[in-house]
Image 1 (cartoon, rainbow, N blue to C red):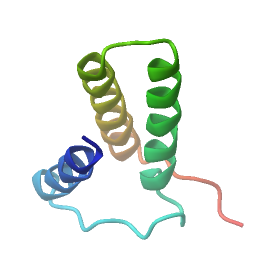
Image 2 (cartoon, rainbow, N blue to C red; image 1 turned 45 degrees about the vertical axis):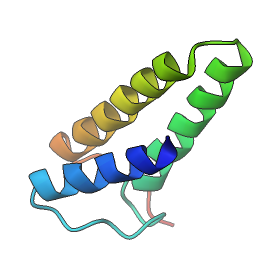
Image 3 (cartoon, rainbow, N blue to C red; image 1 turned 180 degrees about the horizontal axis):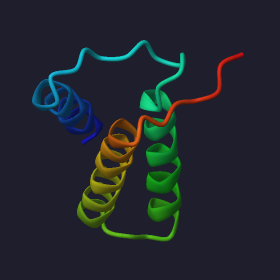
Image 4 (cartoon, rainbow, N blue to C red; image 1 turned 60 degrees about the vertical axis):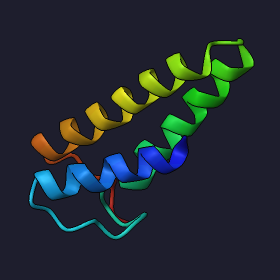
Length: 78
């Protein structure tokens, strides 16, 4: 299931003509994945269907990444 999430991120990168960002630098790439993982864990703990969990988390992470790209949101630099 999570392999499909990775492939979805790759497809998003291709469709936006953007090179994959360096993880944990300034982009929300890894942060979106971490948030998605937490949401997935919580939903599974509350006995949501695996298919529903996959759909909701996939849409959330995809939307978060597109939102971050559109508004040029980045993590603060150290």
